[in-house]
Length: 561
Figure 1 (cartoon, rainbow, N blue to C red):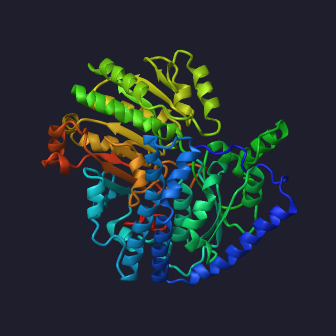
Figure 2: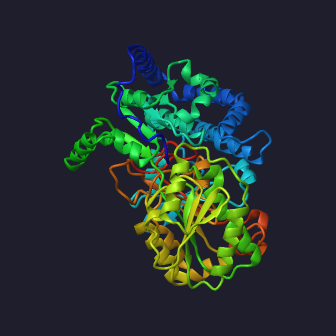
Figure 3: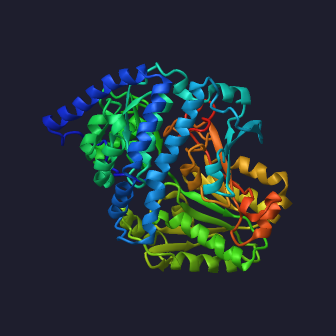
């Protein structure tokens, strides 16, 4: 996930008036933190209902302002994406949080009525989607599971689901959210998560790319702003530096790039002397930031294509599916699929590569709008001078033995798609592809896997074992991991199987399942034994940024980011 790379480098650009205004906002929030701690869960539920009303009143302005800011002309069919990734995602989250709070007010566990079973590796499995009739109607054919960390029992999960809402009077103080610049729901989802998972009121600093949305946010979030639970500010690096260092802000959350995270935690590297001092702090493990920080930093997401016997319609559909994973929002997504891993021994490999070239080339053109993306596109062209230039996008096809280091370690955050090949078929290929994704690709946020049901059945228990080995927080089978983000009762974040200084460890993976292809009713029926419209299919997702889940252990029940 990219953001302005110089955030939190210096606050020398602020004058006294600007500092005073920011400090005044923080002072209001300190009083708001006390007020929030005095609200009962029932009162918070009433507040969420008021929030839903105010968000609903802004949805036209929200989606249209977002589309305009991304230079999508009036009437452009892709403007619809901004409804889905903006207000729709927020309304879904509010509804799921309200459902959880409603259960808690009745003295029930947030997981009451939710099916809980076992997953590989001694894990607890929670059937987290679908939970309602609306879920089944809007995303027919999809199902989602959350796999908890080994050792967390069903009873522990039921007892702990709800996070800070189990102890509503324990104040979490005032936190800082450095908002994402690419998807308009993310800053709002982060605010709600801070409030409900941590009892922390929020100062939200929007990314400069979202400045035009501030008036919309202020109207949509008025029920949180008026009582002092939220303040929204604009600004560049100087504002970010002042706020991250402010002694009255007890926690920082950022959605952005690893470079921005490192600048906040360890210090700037803009000059030789700054870089030297930053390297010394890292060597000595003396972070410049003296308060807790969580971060969603994106990465290079794999798309594993398991070889099987595919029809022409299957080849076309899954090629278009991959193009969508890369090109939605012009590739400016932390969860965009970037590296296709396929088998060099697949008899249909060349057919699929040809279908992928067609799908990638003929998808509608989009403006490349995110700051820095043209430069990253140019860098990709330098890294791979033989890449196919297809309109406004690059396709990097590598044969065995060619250097894939750049495409596998650089989050281009732009319409750049790579294809790498590994030998093998069946279980041997799947195991090799999982190991390659785990060991060679940067980041652990999300992985995608495409497999037809006949091949999946032939692998038996080896398939689910391979899924358990993937060290990614969100794993999508025959779907895109974006579903793990947009479905509020699933979790979101990096793999809990990894440890990093860059973010708090997650405690859950999430898995989602969906139909193989809209054109192949026999494959849907093979998976579920039902008609195509009611089949269950595979995807997996997961992580740390979701609705109230047990503190340090399990995910929330029906409550979202």
